[in-house]
Image (cartoon, rainbow, N blue to C red; front, side, top):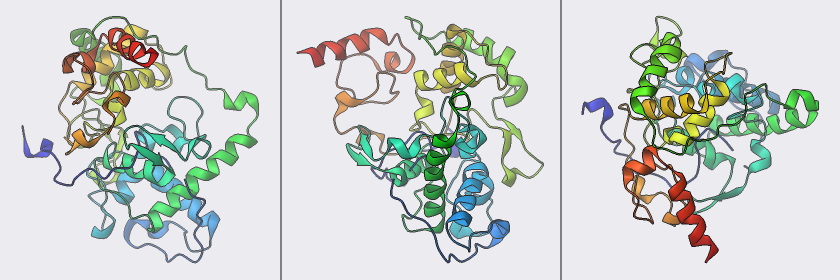
Length: 321
């Protein structure tokens, strides 16, 4: 295993995410303007400016918070992903992984954290997992701006008409009752995914400058999400793939989405340290959680790639007692 894929030394800070998210109604007033690549972002004039900076952080995370940021103090992520790599249109698009309802969903209990979490916790869980980075300080300009932006999306959702709230997406995934077929997943990837994400799965850069991030994100490798991310769960990834991919033409079958998600998650990626601390109550782990320990005797391979129905039935029986 190359150095790029070695576990990060920083311990997992119990909070709660998979995708970038947020919980306390904070707005910024009289903030100082950031330096470096953030200098074009207007953030000094109160709530509206704060929300705009937050939107840009979601849309341009790799550029503004990544390892190529001119200001070392703002280098929070080691991937070159944007939050918008998964949360399309900076989270403002309805459907799979939308952020429009974030404020409505928090605070809430997180099995992974083992306690109540709010929007800021969710943001930091994404920072550490999906972005393979480190947590933002809770009182930082960046945290407050992102939280402020995500909260505004709730008001935006309430103002939308019913038709605008409905995503143009295929029927929800019905997971096949079998283990994933990685070879079929490879074939699906080659035929339907490689044009955008590259034959090697390492993405397509937006420009010749890696610091600007990717036009089409890497699906594995050092610039992608780590093995503690929610997208590293096969069912989570397959649901997103079925709903959204290929971009603009989501026509994969359930079997294709399931198998290609498993193939993608079988590839090398950064490793997060201290994952055994997740889910203090191991019974709360999703059936497709790809790392142990587990509160059952099903093999780790089955938790990674299925079949998942026997695991679901086991826990259903446990709850019924």
